[in-house]
Amino acid sequence: MQRYDVIIIGAGIAGMTAAVYAARAGKRAAVFERSIPGGQILRAAHVENYPGFNGISGAELSQRVAEQAEALGAEFIYARVEKVDLTDAAQKTVRTAVGDYRAPALIIATGRGERRLNLKNEDELVGGGVSYCAECDGAFFKGRTVAVAGAGLTAVNDARYLSAIAKKVYLIGGRRLPEIGLSNVEPVENAKITALNGPPLKSIVLERGGKTEILEADGLFVALGSAPDSSLVRGVLDLDGAGYIKTDSAMRTNVSGVFAAGDVRVAPLRQLVTAASDGAIAATGAASLVNKNNKGDRL
Image: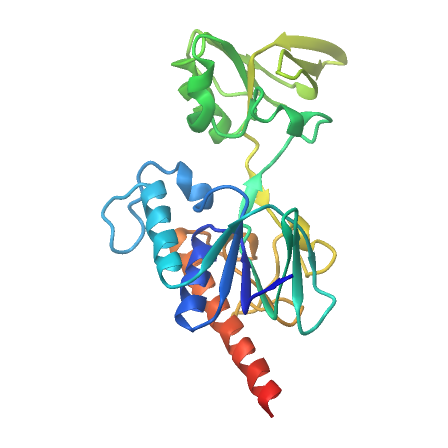
């Protein structure tokens, strides 16, 4: 079992800033990330609301922060965290498929994830027809038939974006949909997706007006908004009704030694600058906790 001073789960701006501050405080810090550093900001082609940059892509900004954290000594571990054990007051345990890791301080910076349809084989079809990012994966469906699930602005924008790539786009919503005004975009109103046939995705099963309908489609882009990625600590940390982690102004949760930062926590504003601020505050608190514990060991 590997040991660190501070473990950070999530390599968005909050998590990576926490790594920078923890490393600068002389702490051995590990950042767990299941894909690549950056989080949702990776999708932003142009960022102009982060101090010091008139314009920079989300990918470049993420890369710069990751490189800064690594240069200071933080370690990035690319593995999915399967479970956290917070029962030991002195050491928090993070369990992954590649091993267990322990530290006296833990920072949850898992951000927000895409809302899912919660269908039986949805996860199995990710990468096989189901996507949560039209701009990321739309090009794979050139000249094919796709669908967008959602009725909000994101779904409408995704349908418009895909209309220039796909042969046909169905916009599936549970209520009346706005007029798109594009010949290859067909609204499917008052419909609920009940099943997906595949893999790979071949068709979408709908329930509409008490009847079952089947739409043949090669791709489905889910655009239902986002939700806090707090499943690892549900039932352990205090959450609000929407699933966001409750913290005090120092980013401390209800469990000693556990902090939360960024989009996963209750906050009045969720922007890059506030995520960075959260990460800095959480890491400073985590480093102070480690210092206090180490001082106690020497007495």
